[in-house]
Every structure is written in structure tokens, then in C-alpha cells.
Amino acid sequence: MILLKLTYLSLRSRMQSAVLCMVSIGLSFALLLNLERTHQAAEDGFTQSISQVDLVVGARSGSLQLILYSIFNLGQATHNVSYASFEKYLRHPAVEWAIPYTLGDSYRGYRVVGTSAGFFEHYRFRSTEKPEFAQGEVFHNAHEVILGSEVGQKFAHNLKDQIVLSHGATKGDSFSDHKDQPFHIVGILKPTGTPIDRSVYISLESFELLHEPYWDPKKRPIKTLTAFFLRAKNRLDTLGLQREINEGKTEPLMAVMPGVALQELWQNLGFAEKVLRLISIWVLCVSFATLILSLVSVLNERRREMVILRSQGAQVSDIFKLILIESIFLTTAGIALGTLLSWILTLLLSPWLRNEYGLILSHQILNTSEIKLVILVFAFGIIAGIYPAIKSAKTALKDGLILR
Amino acid sequence: MIDLNKVLFKYENSNSQPFQLKIDELKIPTGSKIFIHGPSGSGKTTFLEILGGVLLPQSGQVKILNTDFMKTSARQRDAFRADHIGFIFQNFNLISYLSVQENILLPCFFSKSSKQPHPKIPIWIEKLGLQNFLQTSVSQLSHGQQQRVALLRALAASPEIILADEPTSALDSQLRDVFMNALLELINEEKKTLLFVSHDESLQKYFDQSIDIRKYSATSGET
Image 1 (cartoon, one colour):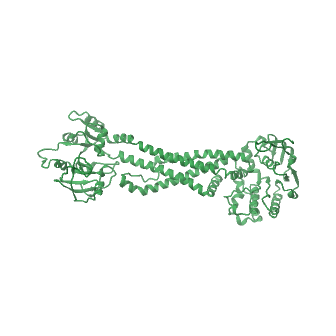
Image 2 (tube, helix red, strand yellow):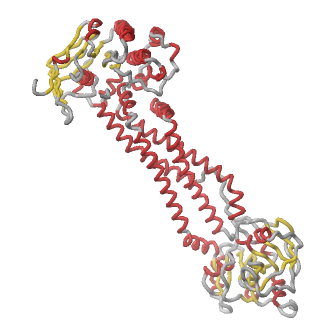
Image 3 (tube, rainbow over the protein chains, first blue to last red):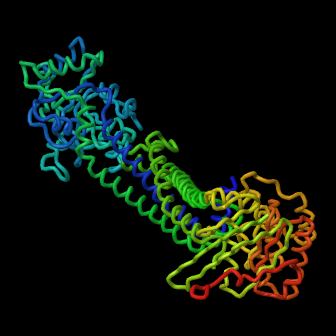
């Protein structure tokens, strides 16, 4: 107890350097925490871009390609899927629901997705969140369009505005607009932080009409889709369904489990995060070097203090403990400061991060994996204290009771 | 009781002259007040550090209160010091960031037997005029007050032996007399053994017995 009290009072008498040291550890710990948090949020956001969809089905190509164009609206499908296959699996006894997905057109650089009303009912991201309407509702008729939040915001669109879609997935000005068939905006979605924000939704029927103005669904049914999403009635049926689709003889299709594919993709893309993490650990090392330095640099000034304590009955081991406790104290205070700082930052920044980058930060002060970081940093603090503590104890032993 | 027998301590350092302290026999009975004098560098401090158990001689026997230092570990000697020896230093050696009260009670915290502070401490505090400064930082006290704090600290854990190393050399003559009177009054009251080291031979009058440390010490070549 006396050692704790002495450490505290001694540190208080060296307030300035103690606070600097604490702040240095605190800032770097906050950096590490926030990086970790953002990393986690990015990973969650990415791997849960789509949930509750058991299989994504498209023309046989690479699974990565299928995931990229069907979930992230990146790249092109090389082949289409016949509507007949979609209907076949829609009616499959093991399938709970299926959502059609057709790509190919764009609106001022944003992808147009032809789908069914089922998309707004069944599609989920981040496990349980569904696309919700900020304004309006789902399309009921042809030439009605729903905008993702980013699209609506960027062009300051309101309900009932008329917009013209373009042929082909082009960015910027299109050479071929569907000027003859303007669309009415019937809904604008809330921000989701997923590719949904950057998409425009119309019905499959609208999509057909765009390309064949006199199309009559009674004379010619829809022929093709780009892909479709499947939900099995029972999770256990997923593998069976996947095999059935992949081995189907009627059409070369391929089914991918999106969760697994996204996880794989993330791990391949994650090197940047690893580099960032390395950097923050490096920053932490530097701040512990600062801690060691600040402990060692005052040892000389503190020689007299140690000699006095020794003359009053403190053992050499007490001197060792005194320095170690100081290191632990500074580290603990630094951790507390860093945690607080990063929590405040999280609270302040999370609305902005959510809107701007679709990153959902957890509002927990510390989660389990972050507690591991706390323990790690704490251990760092103890290790950092060992050298100065040994040095101080040795000096104290040599100095005896009277500084000459 | 302090009992030194055939003690030989040699100190060799590349940048100073080799030095040795040789004490064939020295017995100091409990309750004695001994004045140890000699010029600086004659081994007074070394002598105190041997008695305090910080330095061990190369050979001989150092027995204090029936504890044989030569047969104890450094750790045991540290613990022994905490329980049985009080120190007063030339430059007070107070802890600057502790209050007067905390400084006085410091040895009680380190004592292995976690001694209660001496029951008379409050009386002495008043006697030495420190009662209004208990919560004051020691750095705000005058030299005379600081040395009185150090005196009370030396007595706080009720040690049997007080070792004083030039405690008056930072004080002017008036403060010196005030301090010496306070010291001897408390020592007599408590019947402590006092070993008082100083180069100032005018202080000899306060003591029953004096030792010239030069009797024991020698720089090499003139053994």
C-alpha cells in the first residue's frame, strides 16, 4: 500500500512528464482501438453485405465474378441465366424464396437492377437489417423506380420526379438513353452502408419494356436474368441445392454461398488492414519506448529519493517494485485514457462513418477482442517497466544510504 | 549493544585512493552517546554504513543487538535496519513530495513488524514546534524545521539505535544548538544508543564519549 501511495505522490510531483507519458500511451492505444474497430466494422459490413441468402446463382463462371457483379454491382456477367431455371428453383420444394436479379442498364453511372418486389421483402444485410424506405414504397407498375439513398441524395431527387435510364452500364453520359420511357420515382431507400445505396431498382417487367417497348408478357414471357438469390427452407438443404444447381444438366449454372465467398474475398483483400494494424502496433511500441525513456531519464534525479527510502527501511526489492508499479500505473492510466478517447471518438464519428462509408461501429466501450488488446498493452507496460526497475534497484544497492 | 570484532573493510576505487578501516575491538553498550569525529574522507560515513548493514566488511564480526551481520542476507539486514535503526542525515533526506507528517511516519510503513508510530510522536511534534506544519510539504520548511522533521522520523519506528551523519553541518550555529538540545533531550528520554558523526569537534561537549575515526582508518601505505 505504501508503495502505491509513494508511486502516486511521486508521479504527482512529476506531473508534467507523467501526464505526457500517459497521453502518449493513451493516444496510441486509442489509435490501435479505433483502427481495430474500423477494421471490424469494415469486415462486418463487407462480409454481411448480403445475409439470409443461402445461394447466389448465376451463369457458370468464377465464383468471385458472380459475387462481384451480383452483390457489389462490379464487373459484368458473361452469360445470362434463363428465366425458366429461375422458375424451376422458385418452385423447388427445398426453396423458401428466390429473388431475380437483372443488370445491364444504368442511371447516371449507377446500376439499374431489375428485380421483384420480393427483393424488398426478403433481402437482408448485417444479418437482420432489410432495405427500408425513407420515402414512398415498392413499385407496383411498369416505369416505376426506387432509388438507393446515395443516388437519391446525390441528384436531390424527390418522389414523383421523372428520370431517364440509360442503356448499358456506363459511367457519365450515355450514348443511348431510354428517353422515350421516363420512369417515376416511387420510393427512396434509407442508407444501408451496402451496395444497395448505389443502386436503382425497377421491376423485371419494366426492364423488359425498356428494351422492347411493345413487349407483351402474355405473348412472350421474360427470357433471361443475370442472376438470382435463393433461400432454402432448411439450412441443411443448402449444400444439396448447391450441388443440384452446379451439376444441373439443362443449363450451365453455378451456385455460390455468399457468406463463404465474401469471407474468402475479404481475407484476400485484407492485407491493407494488416499493414494498418502493423503500423498501429508500431506506434504503440514507440509510445512504450517513450515510457521506458521517461522512466529511465528520471532515475538519476530519483537516486536521492531511493537512497532515502532505503535508509528508512525500504528493501532493494521495494525499489524495484516502486518503478514497476509506476510503469503499470502509467500504462493503466494510458489504457483508460485511450479507451475513453476512442469511445468518445466512436460516439462522435459513428453517424458520419455510417452515412459516408456505411461503417457501423459498435458502441460498446470494449468488446471481447478489444479486452485482449488491453491485456496485451498491459503486459507491454509491465515489460517496459522491468529494465528501469532493475536499473534502479542496482543503483540503489550501489548507492547505499548516503549519496556522496 | 554494538559489538565489532577484528573488522577489516577495504575500499578500492580506480579514481580515488585505496582506503581501509580496521577495527580490532569496539563495544558500545546500550544507551551510550558516542561522538565520532575526523576530517572528511577519514571513513566516518563508511563506519556508519557498516553499522547500518549497508556495507559488509571483508572480514571480522559485526554484531548489533545480537544480530550477526556477517551471517545475514542483505535482505535481512534491510529488514533489521527498518526495525532497529533510525538515521539522521546531513542534508535531511526528506522526501520532497510527502508532507511533514508522511515523512515522519515513513519508517513505520517499511518496518517489517509494521510498528505503530511511537506514542509520544504527537507530543514531540508540539515540542519541536511542528504542529502547524503537519500537512505542509517539507520543501516549504526552513532548514531547522526540516532537520527536526528528520529527527522525529528517526525516532518514529522506535529504533534502539540512532545513527546521525553530520546532521548539523547544514545548520547555522544557533539552529545547531537548538537541534542538538532537542536531539539529546529525546535520546535521553528514550535511552537510545546514539552514534553521532561530525567533523565539528565543538559538539564533543554533548557526548559522554568520543572516538577519533582516524584511530581505525588509513589510506593504504600508512597502515
